[in-house]
Length: 333
Image (cartoon, rainbow, N blue to C red):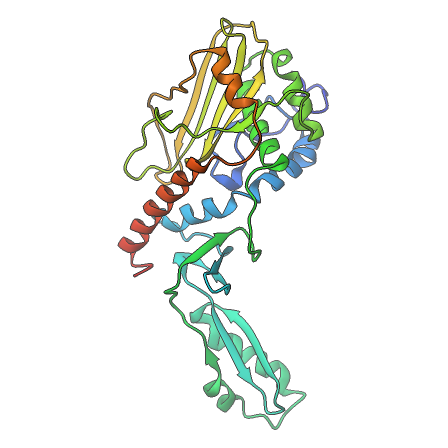
């Protein structure tokens, strides 16, 4: 077995554990037969980092909603008014603190509500050596705080940036890496996906398009449970149609179709992975991409990378599930 990125032979000394889906997005499957340690820590990590940037906030929302989870301290949002906000465990919103200084200046910072007074005191004590005449206790009493519970609508993101991009080369490079990982982890022949491997390695599109967003509007690929938020991978090798393709859906949003080989004549393949990230359990259910003919698959793949408008339904549904759980936990009102 060789590393699929550098082709070095995998040995006990250099093999590494590769996450089929990046661990930062709620991965539950790994393989040791894919990458050497050097590639996993190098190029593969760079590919994952760019892909995670577009999806990390979704997992942070799930972590906040999971039972017995303290969530992440890096969940950012922007209100309709353009105000940047940050949330800690249990969706505790940082409050903005402003301290008026005697010289007419002020100190402004954000802090968790339960730590705000301690941080104010620490900031003032740091300055007291330079300004011993200051009355620290009086200044603490006069410090102003912003709201501690948000009533405005929030648009979540991965950082304090106002816009998070979904789609484009980095996004599909990451999705394609997931598809290649899943295929090779099952022990299938590398030769059928070598072109896809080259595209993952080089970050370039193929001569012919090999990926697209796919959001069915009539026949669903699978049926969702009431509070299911899942990762779904469906791998199909159809020698009759001459196609090898993979359907990838993370958090039930932005489902993507990856064409691994449009001239496939290997053995029939039907493999799938379903994992409920919110409930932390594997799912056994039918996953059926509604593709009966070669022409139908190619019709969907040979198009631009723009997100399908119907994909918005996936985000709306996920937000609804998270909101209901937050209401039950008393995180929001």
